[in-house]
Image 1 (tube, rainbow, N blue to C red):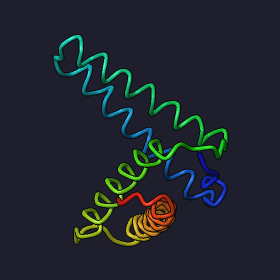
Image 2: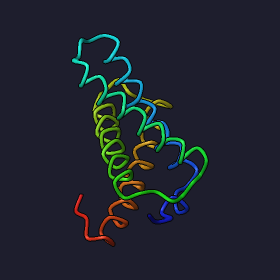
Image 3: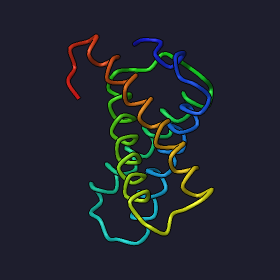
Amino acid sequence: MDTIGSSFTAEELEFCISALQLQIEDIERDLSENKYSKDERIQLTSYIKKLDEIQDQFLLENNAFKSADLLQVSDLVEKERDYLNTILDQDDVVGEMRKEAQRHLRTANSLLRKLKKYFQSFDITV
């Protein structure tokens, strides 16, 4: 465990919490709309619980993150960054909406740089 969380800005913490929440909601929606086997439901429910625990760490500003947890967060942040890039590629995203998306994109990129540096210190390639 390391205290990388203490290097996150308020915006970065908020971005991580939001990315985790979006993933949790997507899985919960998927569980309610689709049929899964009992084992698949157990696995997805367990994954939701794990994401909730990671989210709680961010909410409580508990900086003792496990590398495996931060790998999951890194994947989610990268997914959100890619989504933001897709939004910014659209011509009808203008004005305040564009500025907000660009701000979120900068936050995501900053987070990913910090996480990459953290993982490199453990010789983990992302």
